[in-house]
Structures are given as structure tokens and as C-alpha cells.
Image (cartoon, rainbow, N blue to C red; front, side, top):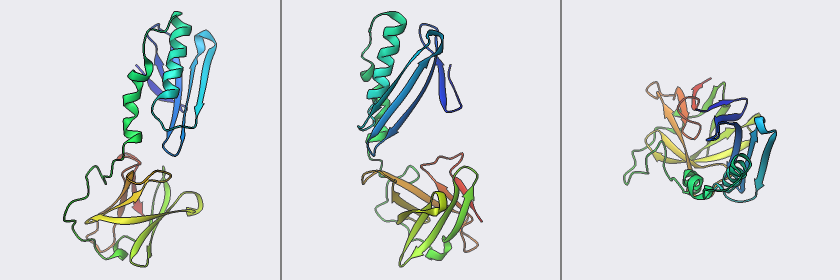
Length: 198
């Protein structure tokens, strides 16, 4: 059984020891992990400048197995690696759906412009930039992300610091009043990815 607290995953190993772990997997070129075994007063940090394919986690799992049992009995990369496939496989979807062959038209772009926010993401501003929309996000709204139409009220964007094909979705909701009242960012997730209009 595992849990997540203070930024660390907690779980018990096969030998019964508690492991504290955290990984960072960034397609922009970093894959990292930390694994601590408090009962044995040991741990390992693995930093790489590679794509997230499970290498740091496999190294840490190998280390933990050797420390706890005295031998390496598993090919940890073949066990852990497949879980990282989504990080290196372009999704090219918005809200889990590929772009339709015949996309439905968007409403007037001013339907979508304005500020949206929630406590997790903070403020996101959608602005009209000529005949397109741009999303401004991050502290002081300094990160500018061009949006491209997908279908109906759904727009896509190339995920920040990701290669082409890694598409994030900006899905505008509740548009009947002439102004979208909510914005769903599918990369953030269903629980904390819904922002409401200011």
C-alpha cells in the first residue's frame, strides 16, 4: 500500500521496509528520482539528462534490492520502463480524442477570451491574437502558449517544453451565454484542471 505526502510517495518493499520516493520525468530532457529507506539509514538520488524512460527508477530499485536482499534478481528497467511510455509517445489528442476529420467550427473567438482561475493553477488568461487565441499562464502570466482550433469549443496547444505531437487541450465549457464560463486544461487533470471565469 502506498500514499503521497509532502511530495514523497510512500510504500513498503517486498522485504517490509518503508520506501520514500519521488521522480521527475520531463520530456524536455531530464529524468530524476530519489529513493530513501529510513530503516536502513540509506538512500539514492539519480539524476540524468535523458528522456523519461525509467532509467533512474530502475537504478534506484536495483540499489534498494541489493541493499535489502544482498542480490539483484530482477531486470528493473524491463519492469519499470513500460510505465513511462506515455511520457515519450506523442498523444496528439485533446480531451482524450484525436482531431476529427471534419472539425466542428468554433464560436466567435471573443466567446473564449478573458481570465480564468482556480486555486491550483492560479490565473490563466486567454487573449485574441489576430485570428487566433493565445493562453497566458504561470507567475505574472509570463508564459505565452498559442492555441490552435481542434473542434467546436476545444483547442489544442503544443505542451510546454515538449516536442510536436505532445498536445495539451484547452476545452471551453458553458458557452451558451456567449462567454465561456469555464476552461478545462486536460493536462492538469479532471480534479484540478477546471478553471472558472473571473
